Amino acid sequence: KAGVTQTPRYLIKTRGQQVTLSCSPISGHRSVSWYQQTPGQGLQFLFEYFSETQRNKGNFPGRFSGRQFSNSRSEMNVSTLELGDSALYLCASSLEGQGEGEKLFFGSGTQLSVL
Amino acid sequence: SQQGEEDPQALSIQEGENATMNCSYKTSINNLQWYRQNSGRGLVHLILIRSNEREKHSGRLRVTLDTSKKSSSLLITASRAADTASYFCAVDSSYKLIFGSGTRLLVRP
View 1 (spheres, one colour):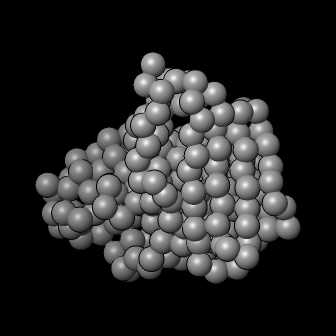
View 2: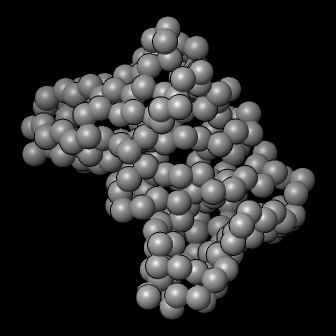
């Protein structure tokens, strides 16, 4: 069974641009969660999607958005990039989602650098 | 703010020694999980302990949970150089898995 796949692996953007990151969950998993990881703030929860609906959201500005498609693949978009958005963005999938007592399966992440 | 906070932030031990990491949290939880991350890659699930459990084992890993003190510990016995990684606790509360800041473990050969 293939694991969680995130693309691209690395991304370099400039301030003010927007970016879209992609995540393909493990086959059969309906929940996709996104996390931002930085050295200073650690792992911060962005949002969770389940069956194409955002089920939970962290404390990030509206510049961070996401969506989930009918095949459970998910995309995350960041508009008007700021230097502080430089981070490793991690996607994780599970069968029934957070709060159901399940473990998360993580992808390798997308390393975003904003110049 | 972080729900789980690990202690210590960094730990350096000799191969063969035991490593203990602690995690404290603030609210009631459904379960607590431990994950491992190698060098900026994705996290790998290690073990899950439910709020009504006190101790759990998996291979060389032993996790304890004290809900009265809102704390958990992860013990890695007979450590190996390959155990070098960052270890995170994650608290399952309010339908969100919130991660702590992590403990960086270095196992010296």
